[in-house]
Image 1 (cartoon, one colour):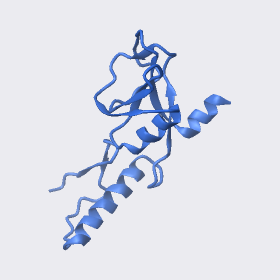
Image 2 (cartoon, rainbow, N blue to C red):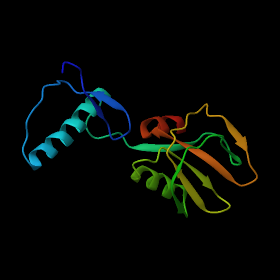
Image 3 (tube, one colour):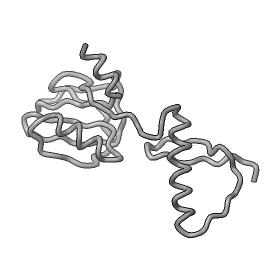
Length: 143
């Protein structure tokens, strides 16, 4: 078939495979080749190296405001510091954002990637939604 094949990247995006030739691999070599192809093709399609940029998290609004649509919960954590939520979300593949509730001391990990213009609503609890941003952007914002 002359159609280009697409690879599903680990972050849910898709990338075109650079050549659609069918290659025959045997045993574990096939699995290693497929994984390597996916990592290289996906990272090249985004124009960056194979190691993804570390993500940091920034509140989209102040305490008492959460994203109207937060996506599906993919985990939660009782935390002592907000940095615990950052680290844990970064380690969960499907975590794209989180809501932290200071009065409960818990963060709730979500599969939806939030934006700075995300619609929010006010709630009684001391919670706020956090979006993922490249750490280089987060550091620039703080300066």
